[in-house]
Image (cartoon, rainbow, N blue to C red; front, side, top):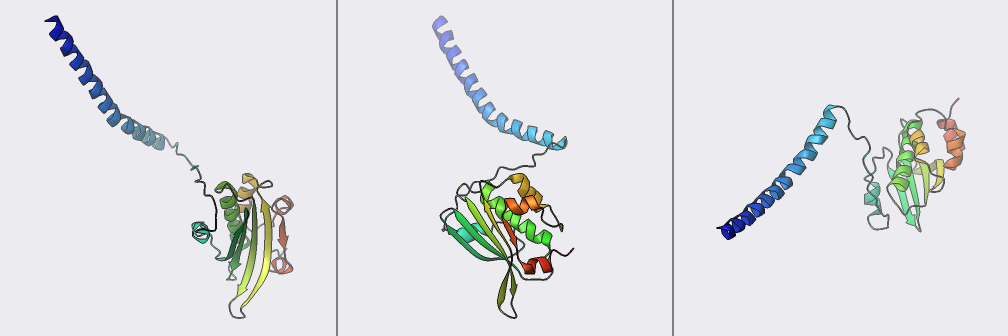
Length: 187
């Protein structure tokens, strides 16, 4: 009888262990969902999502850039030896400095927050006249990863219609043409 009871105890321990493992597999995901919904009810919601890292290459370069929510169309793009060159075009007179700075910030953010292999970003903002088939440079920036700072990108994104502060002009090495100054930087 002692031998049979010992064998039965093994089966009970094995069954209990199996039951606990299956219960844990079912219960733990539910616990995570429960914790998330309690945090949301309390108003504790994560506002930062981790950026997915994209190694930029000539393959699918345009497709990757089209995922960025630019409001200005991409006119030209080039990728060579860790340097991304990007032309964005202004096609309507309704474009504002806030729109242009926001698009520049999006390009900078993508280049340095989302990619590990862009060391330099060269952005040109170009005015395009479809009637005359002409293009005019308005603004250019030459941003390096070493000079980049996420706080300054945030400042650029939210600057609105104000003039670009001198520290941002220097950091992002911004060049304003006479046409830009006449059209957008009115006193």
